[in-house]
Length: 271
Image 1 (cartoon, helix red, strand yellow):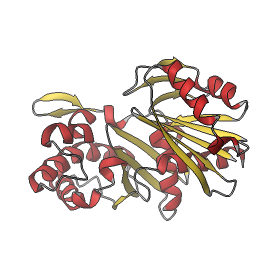
Image 2: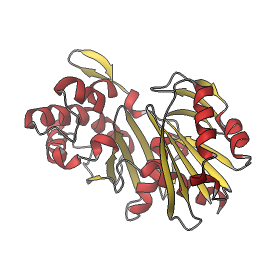
Image 3: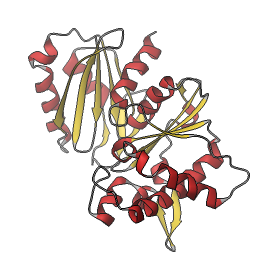
Image 4: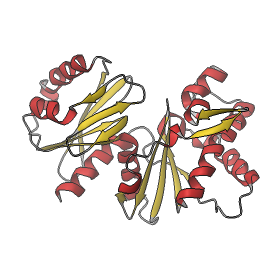
């Protein structure tokens, strides 16, 4: 059996998959911002019957930050204060397993979505959530050249100041400005404003990567239908003839793609 662990800033999702990819069990726990306490919580939940009835042979942990893959270390995290934590070694101790992989969460989500949409060779995946994450998938594999890319931290001009893209176009900012989460927000002005801010960063990514498709997930991306037409209109306004606008589509699993990406990543690594 395969264990997927999606570490988020507020919650961590654990899921068990069969070897053929069937989701057998999943459970969420709060993410304690104290790393040692988090490990204790993880160890406790994995000792519960929901998990002990499965024989885990491999695990993949998705982290919301920069990963040093060779030693299995989480270097830094966007919304967690952890620094250079030996995640793989610690998980191997908890699981008593030597087959543990680490990867960035947005890259794993992008991997799953790209494999769903195999008709596209070059896939740009964006997660619009508390922050903005990105993954670039080519021929069904995470492109190592952009393995550490953090699109949400691109610095762009906004209202006369230089700001990180996610500091004016993330779901967090949407709530701060309009007082509602994407699921509740139906204000056309709000969505037009948001689409304009998303378009600023997306146009820059399109110019560099020239993807065949853009797939959008995350807690805001789950409601892409509310602003997709507005987003396309804003991209057209930029009118960059050298940058074609590809199809922009909603993720197959906007909020659970990461755990499915964990499964696919292990399949690719172990064969």
